[in-house]
Image (tube, rainbow, N blue to C red; front, top):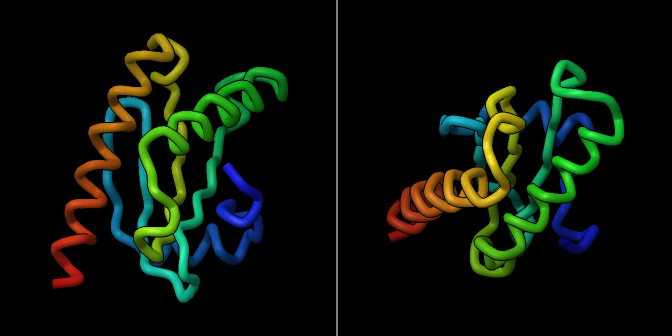
Length: 116
């Protein structure tokens, strides 16, 4: 994931969480809202309750890789904040990948139909 496609500012996280739509899956909570940029941006949040910094950064790297394989960043203008749930560590990478793929497909369908 390019730096251009990442949400870094705390204000952007807060805006997506406060004003965006919420989608829930087993290991993930997604907050989605339209943005003013010509591309999609993704922000990932992992609680300190899940593990130490090494574990949290590994989870963020894995989630970024999953997003890269399932999202076309140039198709839509969305801000997506992904909050990782505790059940993430109980599942394998492939299980989490399938869960994220399913929830992202639902999100993209919702926002594709909204455009028309």
